[in-house]
Length: 506
Image (cartoon, rainbow, N blue to C red):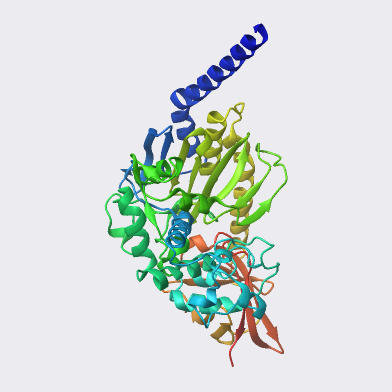
């Protein structure tokens, strides 16, 4: 009896100590932690909401949504949430399956008979669920330079997927795929009669009262209380960017929201599909989104208290100090964000930011998980900042060194020899023309994307995109027998990792 009493006292003491740790960080340290982190990582604006045990316990905006007008961020400030849209798509499809409108195991060709992937066998086998699992065998972001911000329609993107040559194995290798989510989302109008953006709005957003959440980006600049997008990649200085227009990839990442609305989404996730006592979605629908679709890792993490990482229907899942955690991140040029919920702890977190070149948005999430799930304090932001700063300094130095090589050197051939039309099977056409003392690239697959080419030396040119988020890189032309035959063009890894080979048309 005494042993049991001692054990109970120990458990009570541990619980009280844990609660004290939580309260201490949230009440005494969180505000300063955020302010310090925003300064260290050069984040103009951030919004955060924390829900716990059925209530919103913290919701606030920090910094500026517009660096020119100094307009502040608050809980209603709109941000692009990018791939945090994916769980809405997965939920919509799980809801339609629950209503017997479809099966996630339906073949994609049932709804799109002409749909093709790179190989015949995968085309014949691929299901809606496969599309939601990022396991076609393609590389992460493969094709996104063509699709992201591009002028292809949804139908045209799906048609282009036949050109994505896998490097991995179907249903085995994980490669994050935005065009796959588009394809899955386009099944929705086939069975519901409503476009993806209307179905999600009607069946999820409105029942939850998410009245200031938008399923499409179009018109974002005209909305009230919306954040501007920024980056300090490549130059080290914060620069305002144009808004990404990615409605053609809508089901993968076109949604716009704020922390006030997203806190409702989290509260519903934590209450098994209910919000404010009202049933919004059946539990079977919620549970279906959390079933493992793709196994990503089963190895202990060297930094965080996790051992397994999997992917469901638009949501990642892992263990964290013994608790099951669900989360997703989102990235558009100028914005990175995350949503996270821990049902066993009644905990939900959403963080929205307006600088895409930083990892504080994730460090802050882990800091909160540590506080609420009983981990000893470790400065997650500080642990990553030094390495980030080194990488950033290296990148900025490389750009400055390239820029210093732009002098009055003459290229190996006259400028007119480089001008003309170039083609890539996936992307389509670009046009290179003489522009003053240099060259200019017009990317025909995008509405307003150009790049300036300045000759450096040693057959290398400096390519600078008009949208700095795409980057600054050296470029070489392929020259055979005194004639230009092609070139290789890359963009920021944020959009796609691999370069594109363009051949010069006769």
